Image (tube, rainbow over all chains, first blue to last red; front, side, top):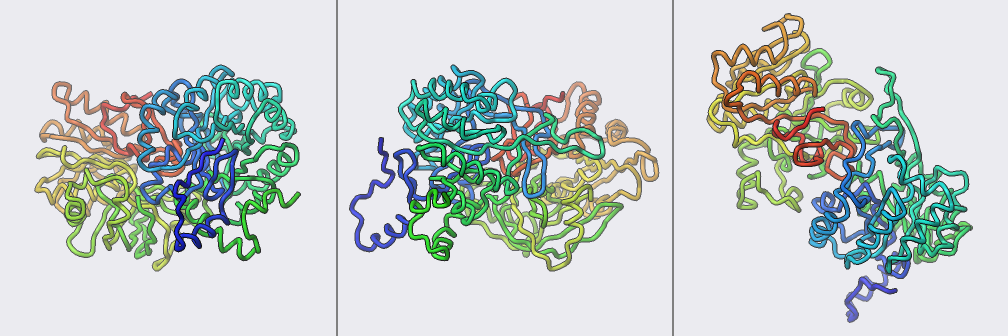
Length: 324
Length: 290
């Protein structure tokens, strides 16, 4: 399947140079062209509107919207945010209005500010729920990819449970693929012994791509009251502190599968994007940094060309997996 | 929301453990009292959200922001367009915040020197709505939660209303803002927990006292969660028949401060709301206290 997001076929001479420059950043993710490999990660970008207040989010390759479940969810009790050196912990717990409201309200609103295919992030508590939500979002014209989160560490009896067992990861992949037509990217947790085996199980059931990593299971303790800082006890750690873990996981998975890998985890700069791609990522998501530097994605995209010049990289697509 | 670089003009203690910081630069995105700004601190990952205490523009004070909003968009400040609006509005001036040194972030802030430049997100949150005030509004602050009452009081006074201010502190040494609020024309009453100044007791005791002699058209309150719960209960008990409308400004641990991460959500009668984006100010009847 090919969705070309550049509809202007009559590129005049003046635009020619710009188009050639654009080609330096362009990548293909599961048959859909991205203007650049930078994707804002789910859970850090809402439905895009907050960021659209301060920059044109169409500069992004795309973004992955807030994790969506069948029913509305409030998530975990607060406090559900804690800080750590070069990063943060969250235990939000998949707060979202539910898939029906996302389709009825959020997507039409999003259409006004974002004109590219968006990545739909889906979560669930049963194989049937994943399949049901994916089937509904698959029918939405704005949705380019389905990103299936089998890796949320903040919900009990769901989420990460599916991503820590190859057989269960395979089952969810199979169920989702059976009811969808759009590319399915399985988003994995790093909280496992052998992440490559999970990725391979997803690939064997027809996954079109693998996204990784979700957050690392973590905890902070309030020294004054001697209790965990997060009301939920544990939370997921993200931010620049986890970047090397993510690079390692992306490298291992890229070596094990023949489908595109979306790398994420602590990405904070154009250099980080390039490092992730060299590890084997076709596209790169930016997560926690959006929360502290709201313009970080635009900044990274703007800095990519000069960083590439410095590193003698002609086109980004040429360096995917270069470190192997 | 607008990301701006602001220059530290002053960073001095005003009471025990309470510091007033004045930052100069483009404050055009700050629309109304009760909003907050989110400051990047060296060595911290998350920004530090702190309430706006006061804003001064180079020319004629806060009123000018409203006027400029009207000129720029042809609508009231409260209806200014959400998308793109802040980016386009630049107003030079200064913003003052008051903060308590409670942890790593505020310790770093306390070390800032005059002339330091800070990376700040401005124009955050949904503040107090002064259109609801009526002719005798009460402003209730507890501890550091008293900070936003300055800008609120100034705007009410500019509208020709004389606010009654009730402040609660632990002890006299921790008191601040009571003189400033008096000097701009508010009726100010203070309670301290240890009785070292004003009435001994809590701000709820002041509410009960003053309700006997003073009329109240509307209530704006900010302070710790436990105080706000007590204030809400006290208001209902004090005026069981015609309870004055009440807006409460909440505090919650935040991730982004602009509505993206859902870190600070609370449940309300109207479903989940983000303290940073839908609040921090909520109507009292919207809140469901656990």
